[in-house]
Amino acid sequence: MNRSSKKLLTGVLLLLVIMTLPGVALAASQDFTLINRSPFRIVGFWVAPANSDNWEENLLEGDAVAPNSSIDITFDNASNVRWWNFRIKDSSGKVWRWENKDYDLTKISQITYYYQQNGKGAINYK
Image 1 (cartoon, rainbow, N blue to C red):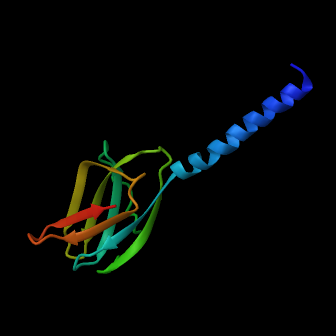
Image 2: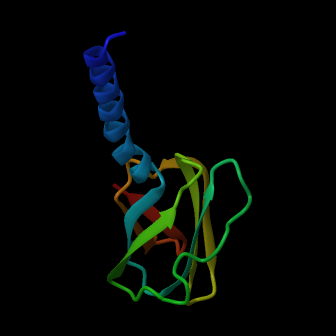
């Protein structure tokens, strides 16, 4: 291989590495907005991979989300998990879980928590 071919090959390889780096960086974190449309403060919010029972830590870290307020959530996703379950605790003391629904946080930008007419907590997302 001559010198100019080596330079060209090195340049192409470097370009390929640079092009893949943003995707790797983005895959390591999850970002979305949690919106509270319930009559209670959200005092706890947890996520877990859909195939796990490990809820990890409260992502609100001592904060609370008041009714008709929102908070931006960011957490590390070093394992590049795609499907998630959610758990919310509100100031009424109730804890609600949404499991095995295959929530894809690579496509979800907002999660809205609210109470249904039957008095149960619910979420919707977009």
